[in-house]
Amino acid sequence: MGELRQKSLEKELEMKDQSKKSGGVLTLCLAAFMCLMIAGCTTNPQTADGEIYDPLEDMNRSVFEANDALDQAVARPIAQAYRSVTPKLVRESVRNFLRNLRTPINMANNILQGDIEGAAGDLSRFVMNTSIGIGGLFDVAADTGLEYEHEDFGQTLGVWGIAHGPYLVLPVIGPSSFRDATGILVDTFADPVRLYLYNTDQEEWYYARVVATGIDKREELLDALDDLRANSFDYYAAIRSAYMQKREAMLRDDDPDAVVAPAIPDYDEEF
Image (cartoon, rainbow, N blue to C red; front, side, top):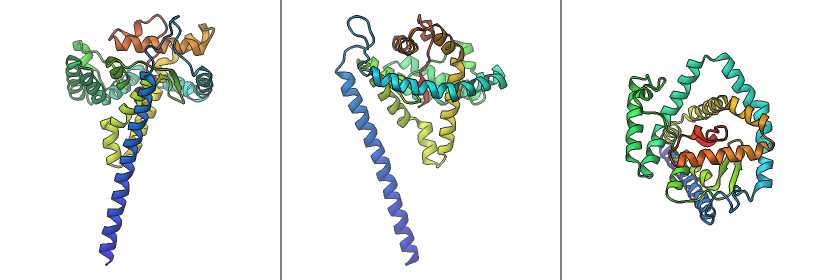
């Protein structure tokens, strides 16, 4: 009887776990659908007079101010400390390793965009950097001309003709749009690394990866954001403009660092 009760309990827990996962997928689908419906009602991230479409500006500015306060109190000091105590070669190795882990997402989005050459390049980069580059610590593929290119589902939706929709500032994550926020949801839930770690009860490693990515990105942005803050009449508007310019450059497969405004990498890269 005791054995039967234990098996019954295990089966009940398994069913609850499956139900929880199904609910999470349903929530993702509903959220993505709502975001796309709203984004689909607009045609452009800019209005007729060239202004970025930001109907939620009051709310966005409030979230932006909270994010900025958190950044100045926590993220920026940590990034500065990371830069001061970590040699550049080590920082580059950390960045290479994190980028290598993201290869499945980049490759999947290239396939969805119909860019088979880009997907093949991602696969070649992954094989070369994982083997010769010692698990991705060294970007040996770049030396052969296979440069790293970030791809996400927000870009994929753009290739499919989905407009940005309203500009949106997300808590902690930062500048985005309804379309790009949908991309964050899809990329996060579909990430094979996250799925593997969650299914093997190693969630802490996924969160460690998220934190490491955040620190790496903030360190990369130290000089650009300091310059932008010092030279901008309206820091919020400057960030908004830089973000939109960068996203449009990425959508066209242009060099995102060649935009007029200081380069602002995607804050949503690993969230």
